[in-house]
Image (cartoon, rainbow, N blue to C red; front, side, top):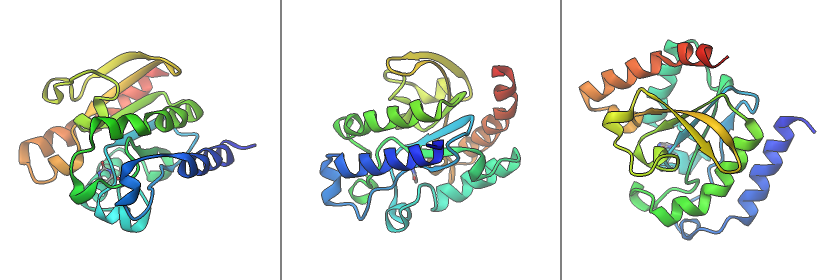
Amino acid sequence: MTKEKKLEKLNKEWSQKIKSPLLKTCNQIVVGDGNPNADIIIIGEAPGKKEDESGQPFVGAAGKFLDQMLDNINLKRDNIYITNIVKCRPPNNRDPLPQEKEGFWPWLLDEINLIKPKLIITLGRHSLSNFIENPIISQVHGTIVDKNIPKIGAIKIYALYHPAAALYNGSMRETLIKDFKKIPKILKSID
Ligand code: URA
């Protein structure tokens, strides 16, 4: 079976068996998207309104900003795999609760294990906190953290601000754009 088919099967199976209180309020489950052979997995927080309507991750304003930053480093959506820790929209876009993130964690682990990326890029504190306890994102953004994760093994995590938070904050926006531009060099250094 190709990796594409395996990933499709994995996401279908998880969509059928996942149990989350968010299923009662969201429109649909938003599964990851992109290239299962990618070197990079980008992990966001949870779907927003546009994603909940369309069923695709990062298609709203934050997604458009993300696409621009990918374009700056000559990457397209099909060069990466993009997903969220929580795959159902929390009501009114509130922050996902710890138990909601925990509920979706095994699904994310399965995605990471199948894709076996060289680099995990986390967007925002909620995504990063799955890998690092109580992170201070203003300190760790733009740095590589080496982690050993049970069931995954050694992996490099690159922490970035969330594009939705940075979109309307001038200095955070500049920082995120700068951090993003470091990605090609980081990838090369891993090879
Ligand atoms: N923000 C996220 O974290 N994920 C999405 O899919 C959209 C916005």
